[in-house]
Image 1 (cartoon, one colour):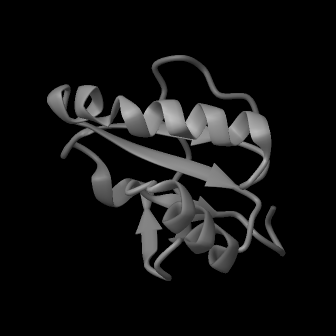
Image 2 (tube, rainbow, N blue to C red; image 1 turned 60 degrees about the vertical axis):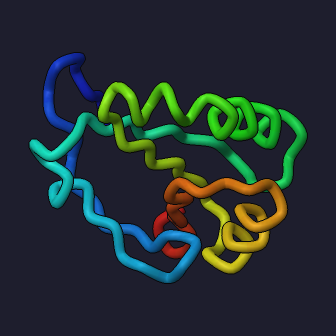
Image 3 (spheres, rainbow, N blue to C red; image 1 turned 120 degrees about the vertical axis):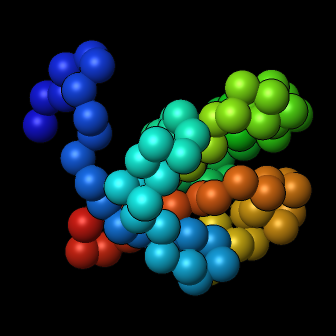
Length: 99
């Protein structure tokens, strides 16, 4: 699927690291949303990138931006990852059968 710049992203509902359903369209108009795709929790590069985002979260909050980080990991893996690395933003699971 190709997305054009400036066009709305397709809606989705995924489970976060706490087992809560997150739906993109429910955030429409409330804040700007950044969807960050990363391949795997606990990998070196992804851990570095998400750690850098974690360390700069105040910038996102100051700009009234909601961050959604999305991977193919299972929700339980994402919970362990978030707990280990202090990631307090939504980590969304696109695990089987979708991811």
